[in-house]
Length: 174
Length: 450
Image: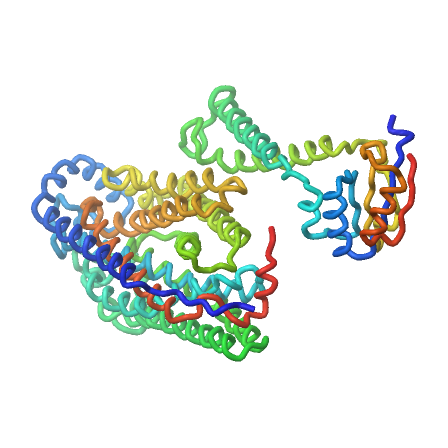
């Protein structure tokens, strides 16, 4: 379904050049699809104008789910379904429930976050990521520009990327 | 790279602190007056709960001396109002001594972990460390003042065979306090430890401070490396001494009771209070226009520290409570029963968790909250006051049994200590360069970004 997409791919050698190139081309109205780099480049998120992830909110909600499920489970099991006297304590006494509640909170928050992340970033079985340039896993920074999302022509985008220090500019079709 | 910046301890600030101390003294005086005149009505009201507690205590103590000390059967030692003063003095002293030593501990951790982000704020914990010598002198003097009323184990009659106070358990623990001396005489081992700990802390404080200040003048990495070495030695010493200090100065108030978590518990309480104090001072200095190199990213890191160690404290609190609750051994549960079931202490017991866990946990949870100076200025005082109550909860019920109270007397003394503490550390801060000039990690810290 994602076939016949045309991309212009700019290759950068240096992360400082890349960072400034991203800032300047975005100022000139270029819409960048994604940047791939072999290591994290500090400040790139801001240069690309990414908003902060909302994953922490999901984590909080999953965590709260874990807390309530754990408490409900224990109170129901030990308080109603099969009351047992342990160490002379009340059937449903809070302190011994805390460790299990804590673990369930962590477990659901972690699993929930991983799941949310996979769904949000569209990662699923038999879906292979696009490789714009294999060298992005080695020593090159790769800027991918979706032609359809931009009003500029191929030539204009190539010239713009070159003028900002791209060592080469390629075309890539999927 | 770094402009010369100095904190100016303005006369107005001094005046404010002196007013704080005077107000504290006034409240204290009113509190003492009220305690002298009104104490006995309360004692009568507490009679019922005292009876229950007495039974519990009696069932747990092989010897009867603790029962003999409950108010219904007459006082031992000083009158209640004087005992309240002693207890409050000791509580404030240990609380603020802890904040002082955490100043040095914070610096040592930064060096040992080779942390870069904290380079511009290290002078604030250094200033806080100036309270260590004051605390050392106060602790030794106060100990002699309060020992008879707070440290039950100093009573010589506990160790005399045939005496009605004879206490087999404390006889077993005598070597820990009295060393080679006769039990019930001079607690040489205990006092040697007290002097040794403060001496060591003060020496390491001076050595590290010397390196930090010499770096300002000469630059280079040799001072940083020397500081790191000193810090590593100090951390090992502090790991042991902070634990033993907690047993000596706080846990021995309940001499029969013991908890293996206690050293950690006191440390966690000191540590998070110290972090909140550092954060609060940085936030206020920033608000007053100082510390221009400190950005939101440094504030964020401090906020994370306060948030994380509030949770750490709760974790330690729960570990101690949970095991004692579940094992249900009378000799251990007596500690919590005293604090949870009795009128003046029970609300403080629950308030403690509310102020030190629930509020910081919820208020500092989001990233934005940790990055806002205004939010930290709300949460840090909560944490500091909360841990003041935490130390009240550790010390007063053990020392005062059922006679303890909380009122103007305790609040007044707290304000006096707070005023004196701030006076000493701000005075020290005004004599330092506010930001290290040649710190090898300064550039890293200026570019710190999270």
